[in-house]
Length: 137
Image (cartoon, rainbow, N blue to C red; front, side, top):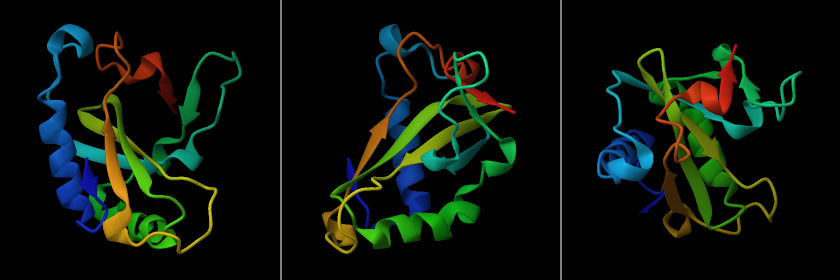
């Protein structure tokens, strides 16, 4: 867990380092990836037509540099004392990270140094296969 007063690129480096320390028996061996792509959780539709899996338009995926402005917006809102960087899995040689920020709470309640950045891994048993819990169209 880190604080949100660090740059997004540093947060992503720490997330990746943490992912490689996970218990392989539970999460499966992490595949290699050559880049990281991020999206805001608000870009994910709740259920696809079959009712099985959430979907995301591939155009919503951004590199850390492209996502930086949105990251700073979410941190500046300061609605709660947390924000999540959730690694969903690997897609086309990219680690897909969903940024989950609270939509409730009073803006400006927390300063960046008061906001914890929480990391999470793909769901156990997914073997890092993004398509098991998120469809990218």
